Length: 373
Image (cartoon, rainbow, N blue to C red; front, side):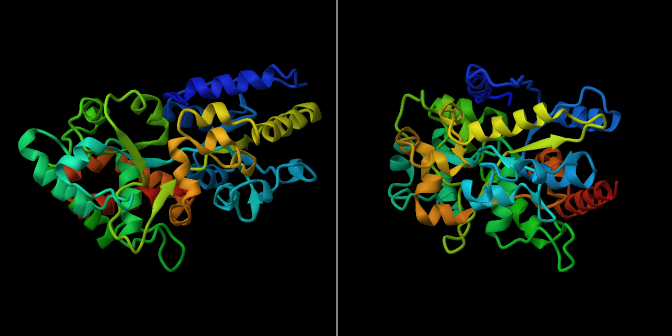
């Protein structure tokens, strides 16, 4: 939680502490790479172990396979922390081998913002159905190129890869249930992204995407729901929709469903501490509004009927039936390793510095090796 959503999370946890619970919460934030490294080290050493860690849904099976998580199963019996209290996909994302290793937090989703004025200028009518396709993005890019306006950006590679991979019919595992990304679908994904760059439609450096969008130089911007705190200050009319789609007959909208996990502590925890952890999770079910203001969606059903949430732009993900059905929460074992490598290598494939097929073959091997550890 180091982005625009960090302040909202801290304010939420501060509100909990103001209720004077028996056990208060202290929140520490750090960048993902630092967080993952520290979590692995502390869990194995038994020193400075956090009681609860807030992790991405795809991290749960990886951490559990390394033996550093404890299950919530015994703690939540007879409490409000039940599957019926959460959206099914979010609750399931915290499960490994039918045990609950994660309690859902908020759902931060990779969506897409678009400049309504630029859409009307370069691809009028493209957003009448509320969904942008890659075909429409290419059409927009061709029309806007001469004006120095881009139609697409790739600021977080694995997010765009995951969505397009599934939209193109890709499967994360083979017939034996093993992670499988060294295939023709992965190649097809990066060939499409490379084409967008080669044609001059895609921002050459994804890091400039938000700046270009806010300056009216980018039509479609895939970004996180958490970027709402920035986009809301745009000086033009904008909209928020799903990630761009490859096939309107196969809508796929990947989403995270962050999970609160228990890090194994060799010295154990007091009953008072354990009860406090459960009490905090129960309180969060109906007290997520501040975090939702930063762009997230709720995972707890208690928030769905909140009128203030229903008026937020990101609520379309759960309110529109066809979109809600397309939401895919990823928690495939090993995919977190794949995504880490995709983030590091995507631009080399897109720019032609690295062979796409060879790179995906390397990523496949790395994921397999890490899963064996």
